[in-house]
Length: 274
DNA sequence: AACACGCCCTGCGCGC
DNA sequence: TGCGCGCAGGGCGTGT
Image 1 (cartoon, rainbow, N blue to C red):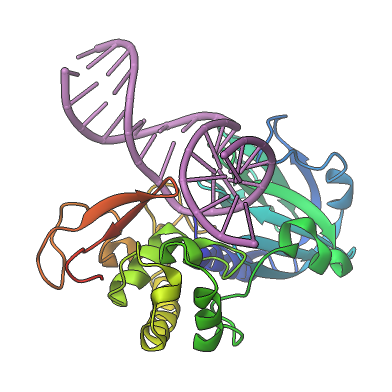
Image 2 (cartoon, chains in turn green, cyan, orange):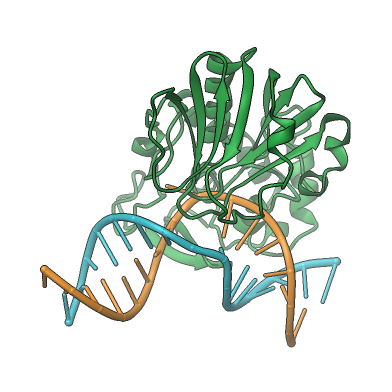
Protein backbone atom coordinates (compact mmCIF):
# COMPACT_ATOMS: atom_id res chain seq x y z
CA UNK A 1 0.00 0.00 0.00
CA UNK A 2 1.01 3.55 -0.40
CA UNK A 3 2.90 5.29 2.34
CA UNK A 4 3.26 9.06 2.56
CA UNK A 5 5.24 9.54 -0.70
CA UNK A 6 2.82 7.48 -2.76
CA UNK A 7 -0.23 9.30 -1.37
CA UNK A 8 1.54 12.61 -1.98
CA UNK A 9 2.14 11.70 -5.64
CA UNK A 10 -1.49 10.70 -6.04
CA UNK A 11 -2.59 14.03 -4.58
CA UNK A 12 -0.27 15.90 -6.93
CA UNK A 13 -1.68 13.93 -9.85
CA UNK A 14 -5.22 14.76 -8.80
CA UNK A 15 -4.26 18.43 -8.45
CA UNK A 16 -3.03 18.46 -12.02
CA UNK A 17 -5.88 16.48 -13.52
CA UNK A 18 -9.10 17.17 -11.66
CA UNK A 19 -8.74 20.40 -9.69
CA UNK A 20 -11.58 22.76 -10.62
CA UNK A 21 -13.55 20.07 -12.38
CA UNK A 22 -17.12 19.41 -11.37
CA UNK A 23 -18.35 16.15 -9.92
CA UNK A 24 -21.56 15.45 -11.82
CA UNK A 25 -22.44 12.51 -9.62
CA UNK A 26 -20.93 9.53 -7.84
CA UNK A 27 -22.00 6.01 -7.09
CA UNK A 28 -20.96 2.98 -5.10
CA UNK A 29 -20.41 0.00 -7.35
CA UNK A 30 -21.19 -2.72 -4.80
CA UNK A 31 -22.26 -3.17 -1.22
CA UNK A 32 -18.97 -4.54 0.05
CA UNK A 33 -17.62 -3.04 3.22
CA UNK A 34 -14.25 -1.30 3.12
CA UNK A 35 -12.36 -0.62 6.37
CA UNK A 36 -15.67 0.95 7.28
CA UNK A 37 -18.92 1.07 5.35
CA UNK A 38 -19.21 3.92 2.86
CA UNK A 39 -21.57 6.57 4.27
CA UNK A 40 -25.19 5.90 3.34
CA UNK A 41 -25.84 9.40 2.04
CA UNK A 42 -22.48 10.08 0.40
CA UNK A 43 -23.87 10.21 -3.13
CA UNK A 44 -26.22 13.07 -2.22
CA UNK A 45 -23.22 15.18 -1.19
CA UNK A 46 -21.36 14.42 -4.43
CA UNK A 47 -24.01 15.81 -6.74
CA UNK A 48 -22.92 18.68 -8.97
CA UNK A 49 -20.12 20.06 -6.79
CA UNK A 50 -16.81 21.63 -7.78
CA UNK A 51 -13.45 20.26 -6.63
CA UNK A 52 -11.73 23.28 -5.10
CA UNK A 53 -8.65 21.76 -3.45
CA UNK A 54 -6.86 18.44 -2.94
CA UNK A 55 -4.53 17.86 -0.02
CA UNK A 56 -3.00 15.06 2.02
CA UNK A 57 -3.17 14.45 5.77
CA UNK A 58 -1.10 11.45 6.88
CA UNK A 59 -2.06 8.78 4.33
CA UNK A 60 -5.51 10.27 3.78
CA UNK A 61 -6.43 12.11 0.57
CA UNK A 62 -8.71 15.09 1.16
CA UNK A 63 -10.77 16.37 -1.76
CA UNK A 64 -12.32 19.71 -0.84
CA UNK A 65 -15.66 20.49 -2.44
CA UNK A 66 -17.60 23.68 -3.15
CA UNK A 67 -20.45 22.56 -0.86
CA UNK A 68 -18.28 22.79 2.28
CA UNK A 69 -17.72 19.05 2.46
CA UNK A 70 -14.46 17.20 2.03
CA UNK A 71 -14.27 13.75 0.51
CA UNK A 72 -11.75 11.62 2.44
CA UNK A 73 -10.08 8.62 0.84
CA UNK A 74 -7.60 6.17 2.33
CA UNK A 75 -6.00 3.49 0.16
CA UNK A 76 -5.25 0.88 2.82
CA UNK A 77 -2.82 -1.73 1.53
CA UNK A 78 -4.07 -2.26 -1.99
CA UNK A 79 -6.23 0.74 -2.89
CA UNK A 80 -5.87 2.64 -6.15
CA UNK A 81 -7.41 5.85 -7.46
CA UNK A 82 -7.46 5.82 -11.24
CA UNK A 83 -8.67 8.32 -13.81
CA UNK A 84 -10.45 6.61 -16.67
CA UNK A 85 -12.17 7.73 -19.83
CA UNK A 86 -15.95 7.73 -19.99
CA UNK A 87 -16.11 4.41 -21.88
CA UNK A 88 -14.40 2.60 -18.99
CA UNK A 89 -15.87 -0.78 -18.11
CA UNK A 90 -16.00 -1.49 -14.39
CA UNK A 91 -13.58 -4.14 -13.15
CA UNK A 92 -13.39 -6.49 -10.23
CA UNK A 93 -12.68 -4.68 -6.95
CA UNK A 94 -13.89 -1.32 -8.26
CA UNK A 95 -15.90 0.05 -5.34
CA UNK A 96 -16.68 3.65 -6.14
CA UNK A 97 -16.97 5.85 -9.22
CA UNK A 98 -16.96 9.64 -9.44
CA UNK A 99 -18.16 11.11 -12.73
CA UNK A 100 -16.53 14.39 -13.74
CA UNK A 101 -17.56 17.07 -16.20
CA UNK A 102 -14.33 16.63 -18.19
CA UNK A 103 -15.65 13.30 -19.44
CA UNK A 104 -13.43 11.33 -17.11
CA UNK A 105 -14.25 9.23 -14.10
CA UNK A 106 -12.28 8.64 -10.96
CA UNK A 107 -12.38 5.00 -9.90
CA UNK A 108 -11.59 3.67 -6.44
CA UNK A 109 -10.32 0.08 -6.69
CA UNK A 110 -9.20 -1.90 -3.65
CA UNK A 111 -8.88 -5.72 -3.69
CA UNK A 112 -8.15 -6.14 0.00
CA UNK A 113 -10.66 -3.49 1.14
CA UNK A 114 -8.50 -2.10 3.92
CA UNK A 115 -9.02 1.43 2.61
CA UNK A 116 -11.98 3.72 3.16
CA UNK A 117 -14.09 6.45 1.63
CA UNK A 118 -15.96 8.92 3.78
CA UNK A 119 -17.09 12.53 3.81
CA UNK A 120 -16.88 15.27 6.43
CA UNK A 121 -17.75 18.93 6.84
CA UNK A 122 -14.70 21.09 6.21
CA UNK A 123 -15.03 23.04 9.43
CA UNK A 124 -15.24 19.82 11.44
CA UNK A 125 -12.13 18.27 9.94
CA UNK A 126 -9.85 18.94 12.92
CA UNK A 127 -12.26 17.10 15.19
CA UNK A 128 -12.94 14.31 12.73
CA UNK A 129 -12.55 10.99 14.58
CA UNK A 130 -10.18 9.50 12.00
CA UNK A 131 -7.86 12.51 12.23
CA UNK A 132 -8.13 13.51 15.85
CA UNK A 133 -5.35 11.30 17.16
CA UNK A 134 -2.91 11.85 14.29
CA UNK A 135 0.57 13.15 15.06
CA UNK A 136 2.62 15.64 13.10
CA UNK A 137 3.58 15.58 9.44
CA UNK A 138 7.21 14.57 8.90
CA UNK A 139 7.58 17.00 5.99
CA UNK A 140 6.25 19.95 7.99
CA UNK A 141 8.28 22.51 9.94
CA UNK A 142 6.84 21.12 13.15
CA UNK A 143 8.91 17.99 12.68
CA UNK A 144 12.20 18.92 14.29
CA UNK A 145 14.98 16.82 15.78
CA UNK A 146 13.90 18.18 19.17
CA UNK A 147 10.37 16.92 18.62
CA UNK A 148 11.64 13.52 17.56
CA UNK A 149 13.95 13.37 20.59
CA UNK A 150 11.07 14.18 22.91
CA UNK A 151 8.95 11.38 21.43
CA UNK A 152 11.79 8.86 21.53
CA UNK A 153 12.78 9.65 25.11
CA UNK A 154 9.24 8.96 26.29
CA UNK A 155 9.09 5.40 24.88
CA UNK A 156 11.07 2.29 25.48
CA UNK A 157 9.46 0.21 22.75
CA UNK A 158 11.63 -0.69 19.73
CA UNK A 159 12.31 2.42 17.67
CA UNK A 160 10.75 1.03 14.52
CA UNK A 161 7.37 0.76 16.21
CA UNK A 162 7.62 4.33 17.46
CA UNK A 163 8.39 5.60 13.96
CA UNK A 164 5.41 3.75 12.54
CA UNK A 165 2.90 4.85 15.18
CA UNK A 166 0.73 7.58 13.65
CA UNK A 167 0.18 9.12 17.06
CA UNK A 168 3.80 10.32 16.96
CA UNK A 169 4.60 10.91 13.29
CA UNK A 170 2.22 10.21 10.43
CA UNK A 171 2.82 8.61 7.07
CA UNK A 172 6.00 6.66 7.81
CA UNK A 173 5.13 3.06 6.95
CA UNK A 174 7.09 -0.14 6.83
CA UNK A 175 9.33 0.70 3.86
CA UNK A 176 10.40 4.15 4.94
CA UNK A 177 10.84 3.17 8.60
CA UNK A 178 13.25 0.40 7.53
CA UNK A 179 15.09 2.60 5.06
CA UNK A 180 15.54 5.60 7.35
CA UNK A 181 16.82 3.37 10.17
CA UNK A 182 19.34 1.80 7.80
CA UNK A 183 20.65 5.18 6.66
CA UNK A 184 20.97 6.18 10.32
CA UNK A 185 22.76 2.94 11.29
CA UNK A 186 20.16 2.24 13.97
CA UNK A 187 18.77 -1.26 14.52
CA UNK A 188 14.96 -1.45 14.37
CA UNK A 189 15.17 -3.34 17.68
CA UNK A 190 16.84 -0.50 19.59
CA UNK A 191 14.82 0.91 22.47
CA UNK A 192 13.48 4.33 21.49
CA UNK A 193 14.78 5.98 24.63
CA UNK A 194 18.32 4.73 24.19
CA UNK A 195 18.94 6.79 21.05
CA UNK A 196 21.42 9.63 21.58
CA UNK A 197 20.60 13.15 20.44
CA UNK A 198 23.26 12.91 17.72
CA UNK A 199 21.61 9.74 16.39
CA UNK A 200 18.20 11.40 16.68
CA UNK A 201 19.40 14.31 14.56
CA UNK A 202 20.70 11.89 11.95
CA UNK A 203 17.48 9.88 11.99
CA UNK A 204 15.40 13.04 11.74
CA UNK A 205 17.22 14.16 8.61
CA UNK A 206 17.15 10.67 7.09
CA UNK A 207 13.38 10.30 7.54
CA UNK A 208 12.91 13.53 5.62
CA UNK A 209 15.51 12.55 3.03
CA UNK A 210 14.00 9.13 2.33
CA UNK A 211 10.47 10.51 2.00
CA UNK A 212 11.60 13.34 -0.29
CA UNK A 213 13.82 11.07 -2.40
CA UNK A 214 10.91 8.71 -2.89
CA UNK A 215 8.55 11.52 -3.88
CA UNK A 216 11.15 12.66 -6.41
CA UNK A 217 11.22 9.15 -7.88
CA UNK A 218 7.46 8.89 -8.12
CA UNK A 219 7.05 6.68 -5.02
CA UNK A 220 7.58 2.94 -4.64
CA UNK A 221 5.62 0.37 -6.63
CA UNK A 222 5.77 -3.12 -5.16
CA UNK A 223 2.56 -4.45 -6.59
CA UNK A 224 -0.55 -2.33 -6.33
CA UNK A 225 0.59 1.26 -6.21
CA UNK A 226 -0.05 3.35 -9.30
CA UNK A 227 -0.32 7.06 -9.98
CA UNK A 228 -3.75 8.34 -11.00
CA UNK A 229 -2.65 7.85 -14.61
CA UNK A 230 -1.71 4.23 -13.93
CA UNK A 231 2.09 4.68 -13.90
CA UNK A 232 4.42 2.90 -11.48
CA UNK A 233 6.95 4.59 -9.20
CA UNK A 234 10.70 3.97 -9.26
CA UNK A 235 11.92 4.32 -5.70
CA UNK A 236 11.69 0.52 -5.15
CA UNK A 237 14.89 0.30 -7.21
CA UNK A 238 16.65 2.40 -4.57
CA UNK A 239 15.84 0.34 -1.47
CA UNK A 240 18.83 -0.40 0.75
CA UNK A 241 17.13 -3.01 2.93
CA UNK A 242 13.37 -3.30 2.34
CA UNK A 243 12.59 -6.65 0.69
CA UNK A 244 16.31 -7.47 0.41
CA UNK A 245 16.49 -10.39 2.86
CA UNK A 246 19.58 -12.54 2.23
CA UNK A 247 20.94 -10.02 -0.26
CA UNK A 248 24.15 -8.15 0.37
CA UNK A 249 24.24 -5.03 2.47
CA UNK A 250 25.28 -2.24 0.13
CA UNK A 251 27.67 -0.92 2.77
CA UNK A 252 29.38 -4.00 4.27
CA UNK A 253 28.30 -6.84 1.90
CA UNK A 254 26.97 -9.02 4.71
CA UNK A 255 23.46 -10.43 4.48
CA UNK A 256 20.38 -8.31 5.11
CA UNK A 257 18.17 -9.98 7.70
CA UNK A 258 14.39 -10.12 8.01
CA UNK A 259 12.78 -10.17 11.45
CA UNK A 260 9.16 -9.71 12.55
CA UNK A 261 8.14 -6.84 14.82
CA UNK A 262 4.52 -6.28 15.79
CA UNK A 263 3.52 -8.65 13.03
CA UNK A 264 5.37 -6.71 10.32
CA UNK A 265 8.62 -7.54 8.56
CA UNK A 266 11.65 -5.46 9.43
CA UNK A 267 14.70 -5.60 7.18
CA UNK A 268 18.09 -4.50 8.43
CA UNK A 269 21.82 -5.13 8.44
CA UNK A 270 22.84 -6.45 11.88
CA UNK A 271 26.43 -5.45 11.15
CA UNK A 272 25.80 -1.82 10.16
CA UNK A 273 22.80 -1.13 12.36
CA UNK A 274 23.31 -1.24 16.13
C1' DA B 1 -0.26 3.13 30.12
C1' DA B 2 2.13 0.36 27.17
C1' DC B 3 2.61 -3.35 24.57
C1' DA B 4 1.60 -7.94 22.12
C1' DC B 5 -1.48 -10.03 19.14
C1' DG B 6 -4.98 -10.89 15.96
C1' DC B 7 -8.17 -9.45 12.70
C1' DC B 8 -10.10 -7.10 8.67
C1' DC B 9 -9.49 -9.02 3.06
C1' DT B 10 -7.69 -10.84 -1.70
C1' DG B 11 -4.06 -12.44 -4.50
C1' DC B 12 0.34 -14.21 -5.50
C1' DG B 13 4.45 -16.99 -5.25
C1' DC B 14 6.47 -20.75 -3.26
C1' DG B 15 7.32 -25.61 -1.79
C1' DC B 16 5.64 -30.10 -1.76
C1' DT C 1 -1.37 -29.39 -11.86
C1' DG C 2 -3.00 -28.41 -7.59
C1' DC C 3 -3.21 -27.39 -2.84
C1' DG C 4 -1.85 -25.14 1.40
C1' DC C 5 0.93 -21.80 3.51
C1' DG C 6 2.94 -17.45 4.27
C1' DC C 7 3.30 -12.99 2.98
C1' DA C 8 1.94 -8.09 1.34
C1' DG C 9 2.95 0.06 1.24
C1' DG C 10 -2.30 -0.13 7.09
C1' DG C 11 -4.90 0.49 11.05
C1' DC C 12 -7.66 -0.73 14.71
C1' DG C 13 -9.75 -3.42 18.68
C1' DT C 14 -8.93 -6.43 22.44
C1' DG C 15 -6.51 -8.52 26.11
C1' DT C 16 -2.86 -8.65 29.63
